[in-house]
Amino acid sequence: MIHQPLATTDTIYALSSGALPAGVAVIRVSGPHTSDVLTKLCGLVPGPRHATLRSIRSRNGDVLDQGLVLYFSGPASFTGEDCAELQVHGGRAVVDAILAELAALPGLRHAEAGEFSRRAFHNGKLDLVEIEGLADLISAETEMQRRLAQEHSSGTLSALYQGWARRLTHARAMIEAELDFADEDDVPGSVAQRIWADMRLLRAEIDDHLAGAGVAEIIRDGLKIVIAGEPNAGKSSLLNYLARRDVAIVTDIAGTTRDVLSVDLSLAGFSVRLFDTAGLRETEDRVELEGIRRAHMTIDQADVILLLADRPDGFAAMQQYGRSKPVIRIGTKIDQNPLLWDKAAVDVLISTVTGVGIDRLVEDLTRFLPDLSGQTALSLPTRKRHVSCLQQASAAVDMSLAQSNCGLDIQAEYLRQAGDALGRITGRVDVEDLLDVIFSEFCIGK
Image (tube, helix red, strand yellow):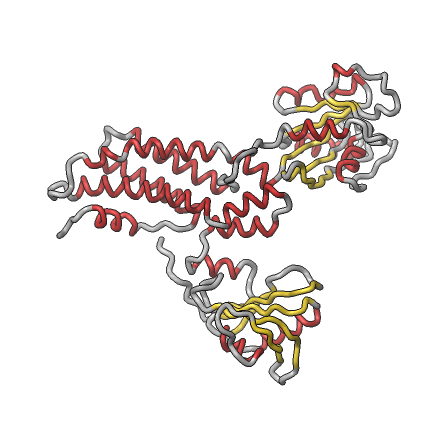
């Protein structure tokens, strides 16, 4: 699929900055009527990419606000169309008045969710990976999330996929040249044999790239840490201590927590999602039983389990999870009786009253975070659709390599499928590339 510029007659507008009130609000306009909008509201169209201080007026000439006006002529803009930004004071009344004035102008409408980015995609300014990276960059809360999103939004990951796609296209071009133009003097026989070593290398590169999907998931979605154990073992107290606020209700009554509570933390630059679960015990209380069911579901999805007990024999309820999940056994409430515990029976001893052992627990948790020391690039697949397409591409290349006895046309078809799978990641599948390679590398038809 070749992306052509998006034909549209609508000019769209929306508030593009954060929630109001704010010091500055940015209102974005994009579409064919952008210059008319600036003329009517500001009296002129500023030179492209030059900030101009102007009064923004209503149709009746009333001054709505004074702010910076910027104009970007297409295609040198975010959307690829004529665009403008009004940088005004971020009061609700100011912004509402300007948006109301824009709504009254003919040919304008309020933008739908994501429509500016959608136009940028259709006009070839951004691909899907860059758009997803931009969304992740806006929502990034930790340093590693920022680095990962920056890698994607800047086009670094797209360049990697496009490089792989070009190698697949080149391989298919070599095969097509041998199949269709074998009688030409400038197409030597068995030219396709040159590309199979590179295809084996490409398959290995894709598989190595896929191996980083687990790391990317932890960076983007956070390491899932579940606090589990018997009722009244100190689970909610630990959650509150680590969150530094009262997230969960803490009482001496066993079974206080009935639902799964979660809080997001930043640990060594990574996002960590901490879950507090209902105490695990035998009960006939229907509400508590539902809480325990949800606790087991959450434990099944955990990356790490913090197993809490306030007495040495309190770990029995969770022994089965130690076989399949990393478990840190934590003895709690040691401020009450520090001599109760045999240190060999636990990994960490803590008290949420005095803070003893918490630093050791946090240090143990960092061992489960990815080791990215010395790694300057984070070109990793972050979404399930990326992983699925990459798996399809790897499998198709593998099938092509395995079909050496079935003919070059069959092998070329599998390489086409691999290229299409890579193209679906970025949203750009250009079938004309094949002809471009053939006619640029061979003097066919001279």
